[in-house]
Picture (spheres, rainbow, N blue to C red):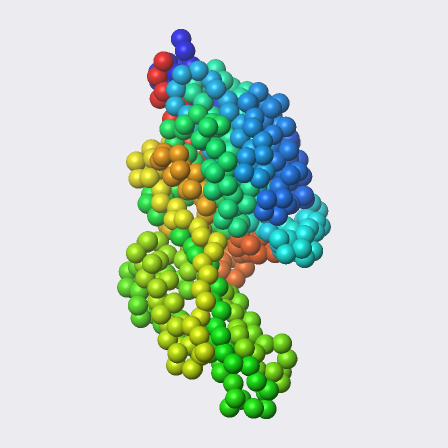
Length: 432
């Protein structure tokens, strides 16, 4: 009897139990792997050490490995007979953040950023969890090939944090390197209780666009403001007026965020500059809303410049575009059923998240359905106590915080199991 016939007769649950039976045997290895990746974070497109570790482990597990896709991207392919092809992605890059967790394996790494500045680096978003869990799941599937039939593709992506890594892998002929998947998956550790799993159908992570606006004035001495067109005043007026877009131009049942993260102008207290720069971030769950917000930003900035008597219209630059993560409904329903069968009450749809991702560039380019889910990373007792105090939002460090530190267990065990359960929800029904 083939593996797929065994799975069809015994059910997905039997295959999951068989594959996950090896979790206890690899736990020490997994924890050491996670600590090592956490302690040695790397910025976007600099993930050399992490990529080399992923490639080395995959080769040891028996995967066919291709390295340096895009920049540091790695894929491992494990062909195991007839059946569907499942792709699972983990992002590898860290952030220019100084870690403040107090962990004995905390990062002390510094690196040069894209501008050549030396910055601290930390896995403050949890990509170390993603790398460790995908390698663990890849190992478990390789060690229990009699339990399933199909092809598993483990993809390790660089540069998620600057929204370029997925597209760079696609542009580097990813489609020619791997067999076309039937489905693609990704997950993210988030600031809710560890052990919990959160699938969500439809729009899950928002689209995001960053915009740089340069407004132009007329410089002058600080004592002679009548001779100037002050770009700092102009930029300040734009900041205040932009707050009306979400409040007055977006319907209450829609969603939009407009955040002005940076404003810069001038060099000295008694000099009125000739230009100022604003940098802002726009997030929505709807393409039409996104287009409207971007147009509104341009309209308001242009009008404020004209009202100020600016010598020229502002310059606008869009960058760091993240696509909408819109989970396929049928795929997510099948996934949710599989998660519920395994995790029971620990499966809970926490709804849409306003964070953004570039993962969907990969399945969109490959023309395959996808689903992306969340896993919890906060100690359940700590989370419960914060809930009782009503201080979850202030007491629980979120992703990108210097204090963000997922508890090792049950986060890693859960994150590994979600990948196995998701893959076997397709493999187990593959037929002979």
